[in-house]
Image (cartoon, rainbow, N blue to C red):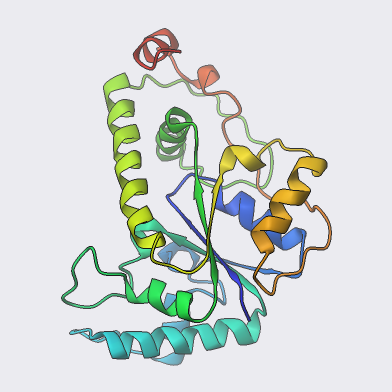
Length: 248
């Protein structure tokens, strides 16, 4: 079945988008497939490897990796028709050749592309808020929440550090786009396109997202996750310094 693969960096709203699409359609939210913290999930690649008693070869060649990925996807598609997968930038090489050029398309992307999956490149348009989201998550240990939370702490964050993080994000996006341009079907989307949008605005966005897949739009559903930081200025000591550095 032709499902959806959300490609993104951490802290870009992938949990939000996966749950929104699943609640709006017949799609199945498989989750972050190559994350070691989600090994309890049925669709997790590493959990599947362990249950199947599969050994990860010490010297990895593309044919055997492609077979491994094909077998895993057979399992996923059998248990989760029309899956919604989440693959982070740094997971592209979780199943890769022992000797592989960084400009070579990773086997994972090759297999998903050839099986007819559609890719969604999800980014954060507001680079500063993305960098601060990473900082707050690391400081608080709260990465995903399904209920409203209140962060009481205030943090001093060096503007130079935030600017470095923003530049790094730009470089990563450019690098990943080099891969995505070689795939059949890729949809570009930002978190800001989705969060806070009303039903009328979301309907065409979701329909376009599902077009060309076996995911069937039903209604505009609800995302299950909540935004951890509502306004970063409430949790930063040196607001004026950061605003000046970013020209706000």
